[in-house]
Image 1 (cartoon, helix red, strand yellow):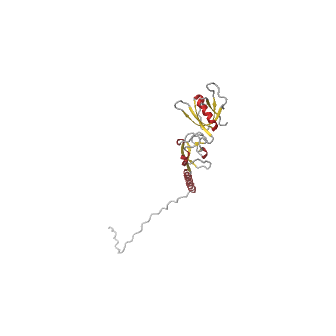
Image 2 (spheres, one colour):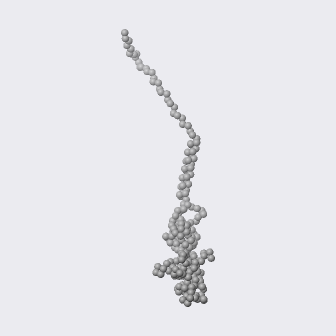
Image 3 (cartoon, helix red, strand yellow):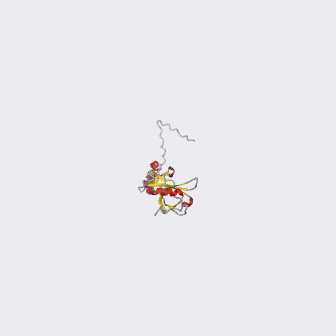
Length: 225
């Protein structure tokens, strides 16, 4: 005898057993590490400081004038002698700004300006040349009459009277003239050195007459004399 399960025919809604919900796993708790937080704050602060320093260093600059090549005292400053450069501002330096370029060109160097040196108000002079009471005399000299070394503006020299055709210098005239070099040039025809010297007005006539005869020699004296 077999038993057949009866179908539940009980009227009304059927009820079912609720499914068992899976156990919820709580998320892991993150542990805060104070040392890492402090390190991150320090790194951020350092980054801000470095950025501020770099910005300040790049903005606190000025464009000034510098010598492209060495400019010697007494020489006329030309445009090719100058260059514009950027430097950091320094309260101890008072260089001429780049905007003074046109004003500087054509002036004379009041002192020696080394290559790359900054120009200042003391570097140049707009005093007329020759100054009052002095005269510029040009003297053409052979290699035997001039030192075999460069002469620059501001050099102190003496023009010595040398024996003439008779072998003696005139006793009545001064034996030398103290002068200052203004500039030099090479005569392309003769190869002689033409030296322009600054002398007192009263000495200019005698020196020019003597230089015309060729009976002179130029000697370079120490600048400390």
